[in-house]
Image (cartoon, rainbow, N blue to C red; front, side):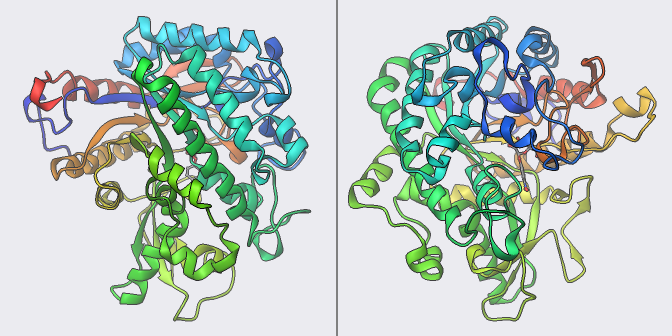
Length: 493
Ligand code: PNW
């Protein structure tokens, strides 16, 4: 339960952002409308057998046409920010190899203006997994160093057209998940993997994830540098990255398991955050991977250190246990490989479960993880400003459910309130957290789960695309009303 009752005792600082999150592929639909090009997710979902319910994002929740109604729903909740992503292939249908699609620019201008008119701050992700298929076909996407130039070209266009009004920029959403699923397990596009890691026709699970990550990290640095040198002074915004942040809890008190939990984090999140902020991969990665870890040139290192981050975005949903597999014996298989730092990580190990299971195999409810991960990042990255850019609960709708059951999402409210409570504790202990976004405003296309998993504060009827408010939306509205609008004094802003 929340300990604080009114504004004066709210732990959330003044100007705190409360919002909801979304992404282009999961929300927009309109997959071929008004000149948009095909992206990697369009190509992937159209292959049979990739998505559990056989669906795709062709229509998704039709946010492209219904954004006004959706902005109205946000206004009713009372959020002061909205996180969404830009579809690269809608803006540049063929990347650098084609022209800017004016209709795509116009759509995002309409969305941004609609938000600002209602006092909702746009919080924009430049790339949330979807890249033009052209870049996959031409040079294998993130495996090709040429993508660095392409990403920079694209981001420059985003800053140029939208940067007068967008003050929060995110280069990438969860590059760690995108790379692991795209190049290690092969479950996501470009579906590359090898050996026991998955069932793919091409790939190298031991090496390609690190090559793709290196190109992505350098792309990020190039774009931060571009923003800092060409736009930031004039436009006055901030730029960061969003990581998927799992809290890894040592399975036992042994020194081995504690070190394994550290390694699990290094091979999952610090893999990106360390080079981006410090210019180097974590030491454990160098030790274990040796020459399979691509090295940065001196020039790259300087660029990385110089570019830095204005904030770190965390998508936090769950915690896992971590168990040592370096000094102790582990069953071979997923989670204990060299590519994960010989640390078995899973929500369930040896009969111990980290929290309540949910409809998703990767999501277990462990609210304490929120305080722990925020505190961990605070300590490791010098209390860089943080945003919780996603947090939420996915549920399954039983066939023939009554409307009361569909909208009465008590479990989601319990999840959100317990995680916010834990976040508040971290803030009270000094963590520099500036905002929180619930995933998500609406039910939407949940990647390989298709439409079978629902994360929305509003229900979407996929036959009619009608949106219906759930109890959680109302709960969030009350929560925001109670915890925002604290006046900022000049000394505390
Ligand atoms: C995030 N995991 O993905 C994404 O940013 C969203 O697009 C997505 O809809 C949301 O979380 C809910 O899944 C995740 O395995 C993918 O821990 C995988 C994991 C977590 C988040």
